[in-house]
Image (cartoon, rainbow, N blue to C red):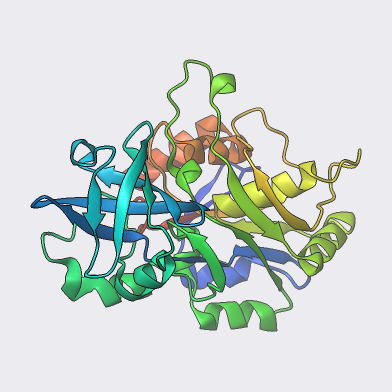
Length: 322
């Protein structure tokens, strides 16, 4: 774990077991307890096979998916996923998106029984991933996951064990939960010439009444609020924007959706500190951490991470920004 101190500009090298030492009694730690569904599956048509990532349920029986190779998934064609599950391609979107119509078939049940972990494309499993299916489904899930239909894990949370969470609670840290269903917005590259022109995809989030009360009390009393992952940052900052009040330090409970895009120049209303992984260039995630810590400090931290051979991306090492 790399620790980045914003005030001093220091970069310190620690292990994640040291994470609880950075908290005091009364501090707030917020987790995204969304659950990843086994959203990846293969379908066959006319002797050809395509890989599908199930993005979201649009309506009864209709699912938006990503597919590859997309050229094999033509409008009007039918795909079989097992002996009983079959779908028709009814619409074509951009960047490999399609809409599949399954009629009244139980797609979620099929995915939970036979789907694969929606691992990032840079994690390759070869031609026969079956032998690693169970292990991937277990590893690509936080120990505190509860419910939800995310297509990716909130990966900053993968570092936690139940023991570390218990040690934080014993120390008087208030461990709270939100739920943001991780979708394509999290991985959407920035292609616009101007940051202001980039449009984030919509993602659903939920904040409980207890979480809102505890976070609001912490802000009133100047106790630190630490977000575990960029999805928690976007949830808390979006919930602050949803209050409709002048005060910038209050969040509202409820289930809403967000397109919030955080980049340098953004003024944080709720989040004081962040635990995050190391991100890809030109990603909205890298821009978010740069907004919190400052572009130059983050670039120096990344250069240090390369020198020290930190591991990047989903199963990589982490950074605590103080």
